[in-house]
Length: 260
Image (cartoon, rainbow, N blue to C red):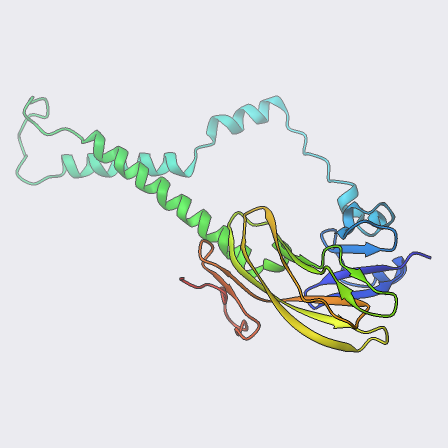
């Protein structure tokens, strides 16, 4: 019977049977390794484990939209930016026509002031920029508070000696965010055959690119049959992100926000 190992926030866990995996908090993105596989892979891409994620295999059908409804929807859909532009026009017109001291003057007078189109365009651009900043802040908040879904680590293809010992070990960081990570520190536990910990080494991986991987070599060991990796620190100036286990999170909406 095939037995599976998984990577969690706490490190490597296992072995598990498929039935035992179904009782854990595994999801389709969890990295899994089993004897005979070349590398760790997401659980949702392993054929034998796809039955654990029925919702991923059968996406919900798209809603049926009739031509009449679709046309009506397009006719009356106005973006937030368009509403902002309309609001600026109305306010500018009100200010112009309500100015004191103009009573009795003809609005057709060529010398009368007109609405400044440049100011309107500037207001629309400011509204668009503010909206973009708001969307970016919301995206970064999601990355910071759910970083375990986007930033992962594995031990690469390390080798072991027959009577114990680990060598050619790497800490490989996978960054699925849109921002580079300045540094990621990993605690590597060297596990003996009887399950005890031989030693713990810290490795730091620098400059992990957005949507990319980076790695750093780890120390060899003359004892140990497996390893467990745990991320203990992450810093990203572009994401205003600083993670450390000693940062309190209870009652805080954005505990890992950090202006670097």
